[in-house]
Length: 254
Length: 243
Image (tube, rainbow over the protein chains, first blue to last red):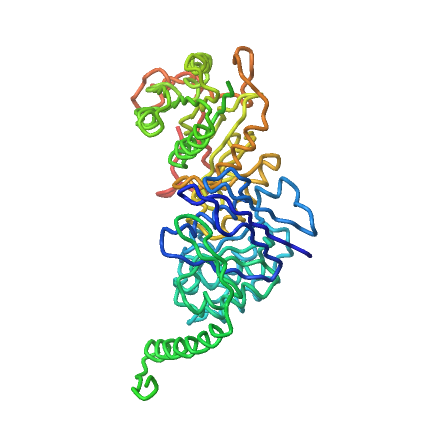
């Protein structure tokens, strides 16, 4: 299915035209949105979430095209955009398996078959595994995020996924991202993590509420990313070791 | 003037969504007024005036059934709204017992559903939800995407025709979609005279309706219905007998 997301620039908070006039994203694309807090990342995500039509403060226009044409108007209001917020808890009082079944039913999917798959994928993202009969509300923050991510990746029909700081829940962020992007969805990700910023081919830089520039990852940055990833791997290694009760040696980090 | 009736359980975010819709309309140069029906006290009329600078009127039902009070004052609310010169009049209800609905035929009916209410909420809300034209799902930012979709499905199951709009009551995200839907109604209410409620109101016909406070059979008059207690084998400590 050919899905395309088009974002047309509006104005920043001061009222100037946004420097980035247009962004096109196709199925499988990922865009990192970067900028200090208060720079307008969340407003941009909100504009995408409600498919702004020049009627938000930014005056941006966001269009979603499926096979070249806009989907049915009634789809606008329903879930064409899935959002992974910073929540780390569920509120429903039900087991993991029951919840996945219920979600499947609400999406008119066959029940029964999904729980296995979703739990299996979720368990590749978090530390301690969850089971189908685990209570949703008893899951740890990391398990909760892992289940939310697996659920969006496998179950949600929304062709666009918005991610608010995937790095925040103590889960495997690289695996989480590859899971979310691996199903042909368009991913827009607000992040403060330098490696995640460099893991999309281009990053959108925000300031004062405006889309300031679209910076492509340069060959040199590719190399930097390798270095940073190695550093990050060391940090993650230390984290894994320490939280499993192990000790670490200085020479590994020299 | 376009009148909009906004209903929903207490603390579901009715006032918050009206404030955000009003803010958008004001920014577009339109005039807005609001009427808030409540039971005991309400800070909302002041809140509307202070935050938005729009004319606002409050009605307290006190010891009366809030829904009866509401429907008895529709004409007055509409006349007052007209006198302010507003283009839009939001009429917000207290929304309490879920037995009836304040929605009126031909008047845009908005019902607010709180995503934190849990999975059974849509089924419990009755005519308040089943008779709405537009359903605003609030506090969706406090639950996961999957939970939002399950709740949306629950709403769709009891009211397939309603347009659903997720709205964030804190920052106002999503009210634009709701406003687009509201603008699509070309209803301009000059008068409510002769219009009909979409659902009948609950009866208020027993002695307690008229101020009785004592408990016991001999103080109960009018239409009284008793709890059905199934017969139990034997008459142990929990068996009991009914007089």
